[in-house]
Image (cartoon, rainbow, N blue to C red; front, side):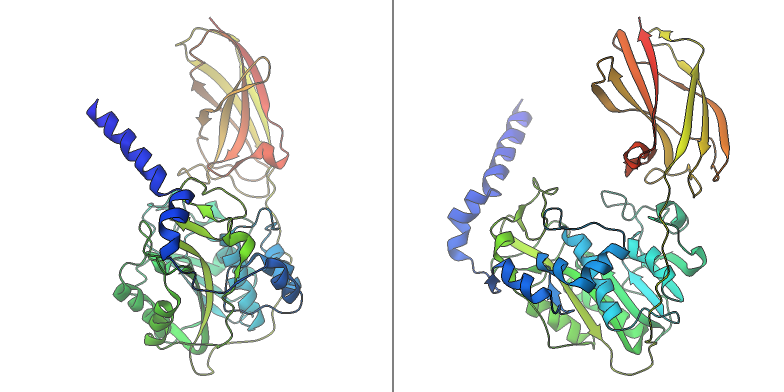
Length: 441
């Protein structure tokens, strides 16, 4: 009982001290905003004409024609209402590489803290070879660093890609196992802040400098503190601007003098309060207790002229087709509560990619949703049926499986829907699900 009371008190305490009211009343009088605050509409007019490559995250960037075109190439839909700074980071990295003419067919690229980012797959259409490194320890929510990513790269692809052009490795960013002066460009999206101490982070940036060709660039995004009281976040080290620039220069890099650090007032006044509002949109400026932060993007330059630069190619990038036929046969429709349901399942892969059945995140499986006869959803994740093997495009898979019926008596609808595990249901892409009506006695 004392443990329950303690947990309730702790929850209430955290709710109070992390609240906006607590910050505005207790902390704000002693805090200072470190950058200029402007109205978004002022930046919007500027963005229609120009956009710097070194800058903090700003929603106004979506009004720059080349920037939004770049975002569309990555097959993301973004506007003021559904804006997310992570999409901004990837788009800003790619936009900058385009502007600096590094996306040419002869370039070699390294992604540090690569995970399974969209850019890895996209760049196989643009350059000679993409290398990516990460620890791949499976620690992060959402499967960004699943342990099998280096050997199951295809399973995580957001669209078809050139498999021979992408190689992922389990490797420490503090000790890159590549030769000196090897890559034409490097990128790292929201990774360096997870690398440990300042000493560790400096070591990783020095390693990027070492393996980069003279004349090459490293595009980095990370977390930037916007207020003087800002400290740290759980497992993350956000940076003050001067602190970050000191590390960059100590590693040997230069940066262009052009930098836009203005904060849009509309989003500063309506920040995302962590952890409760993690899914809030627009997702631009965030606050965790005493730390207010957003994303910063910087292009780091290595003196010289050995890196490849040249004209970009513009191939058409196809989309995955998420389609499949589902047939479910049962010899009977009335079951006892603990009786196993033996099902005959026939699936046809009408997609344009192989259905990979291994692992968990991003595998293709058959999900079962539970509805009542009024078509009200009772359990979105009632069951999952894993395929006995991979299924190639155009192939039909015929197998049997057993599931347990609902434990409550009554009439039920079991809705069978293909899914990309932890990502989406095929029905969300327009593919029909299949229903089986049963009675439990």
